[in-house]
Image (cartoon, rainbow over all chains, first blue to last red; front, side):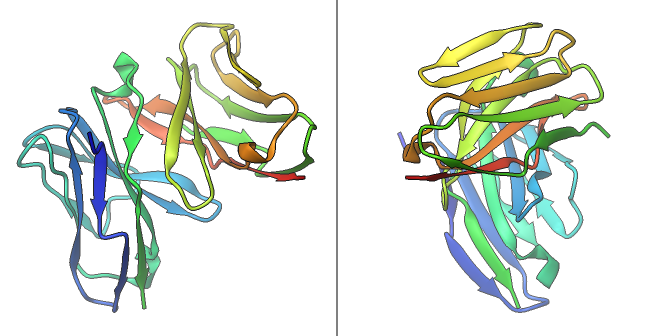
Length: 115
Length: 111
């Protein structure tokens, strides 16, 4: 049971480049989300999905797109990378939203640097 | 929007000393979760508190939810070097109940 798998672990981009951060979970979780973590800022929600075909914006969605074509996969796309997007990105999933008391399971993270 | 304020931001302790981190909200919370992130790692769920005044213990860790469900604390008794990391509180926000995280308390333990 792999849990939540994120790829790549590290990535360096030049300003203006695009890329996709991959996230997959094998726990049949309905809820998936992306957070970014910056020093002193904690974890901030970028986008989330409550099920296949459903996505919505979190606290800091600008510059990012997501899609949820299957229950397992929730990729995060950077459309035109900017230095302000240098961060550590975490994908997380849960059985349901926290209103029904489900803890988040996090992937190992992707460390992204934009130069 | 809802915020959960967490203090202190940093805490340096000698091994064997106690440690406490506090989480406060201006609004009543339906529940609160606590996570631990080891250096270089990812957040790992520790516990969830739901009831007013609830107290839960995990070995040397004691978690408390305030009577008004607006604050919570995590207390570690007799810290060990294995306790090093950042501790986050998190609470549901909005109609979908997405977790909003506090900024975390980074604990360092001097042997």
